[in-house]
Length: 471
Picture 1 (tube, helix red, strand yellow):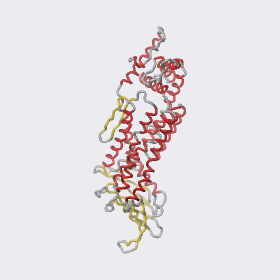
Picture 2: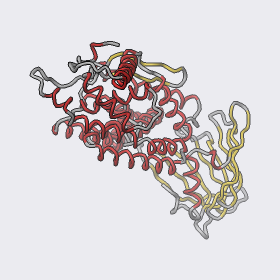
Picture 3: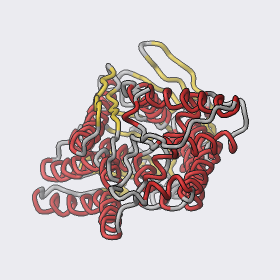
Picture 4: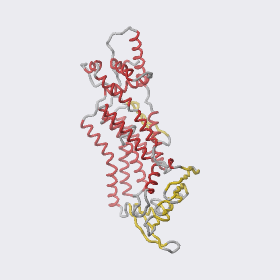
């Protein structure tokens, strides 16, 4: 056992069998703590979080764009993790490492050694904030140049990093708010974690991402143990062992990495009293460290808290401000700039009869053409989606009947090859086949991404027409 991590206990040695047994337990637990602290940073946890994130992105349809979307996702994750890495190195974390996972991204790990709470909160922000700033800059670059890759990359940066700022565990936003606000009181912490878990389940259900729902369920089931540990920490603060520590003449702020031996014994006894057996030595050691860290916890000051919360809100405000600013820039620098416009025109059909169709322009480029029934003013006939910004290529086409999608709706890749066929019956989804690696795969409703299901539901609400198209 490394005795440097513990202060000597001046009490006399007890020779009774019961006391000898307790001393042996203390030694085993403290030896396990030394082993855990000397162990290299566990990167498996970070890789697991990254893998879960990738599965969530897959469920939400982030990979539907093919290899290009995967490469953009790798870039976004690399920038995100680099922000955490820089913050950890800047604030004195130990064993800081970045692990690269081929074709998927990176994960950062490190050990906090007596790092102030406000510094940990800043590190949480340094992951998503650079990506949000980059996304906003790319929006302005797109507004000035009209280069559509800037817009696509900006969207990826902003969606992923803003999502990561949401107040859910294990997202950065959840960790940030816990450190800055909710860790100050055990009941506040309990309420926050319960509501965060329920909200995560609700968001997962709304997005159709079952993995988010599962994480919310696990979060809800796990709130009991941290509350118990916080309760034990509160009681230990009022024990003579802790009072004696504070009354020492050379007393300074306690080091979370060095547990005084008398307090370690009190904590270990409390753990065995509050957690029913059997309980493993490794678990007792882990709980002992967490309780001591809670005892040593010092919340950030008033001004630091206000500043940090201001930075958190600023991160959410930057994207809409950048969007408004980029529209202004586009109007000033590009005379052909139009955000979205729609017009209904008369045209002559191949059989010589008069027809009516709606044309939708996105940033001045024809994007959608849909035939319209002049009597009911509902979509009725062929619809064509053109690739943006090249209106000479067809991206998708299908058929409307009395304001509802009906029959096959085909989607094509950049070379014009058919890659997806969705079938509708009077607006109701029937089936979908997708071409993956040259093989056709049939998908059911539950296999569709959230974005796809959301779009289908929008068009199923009521018959659609030029004045009723969802925006």
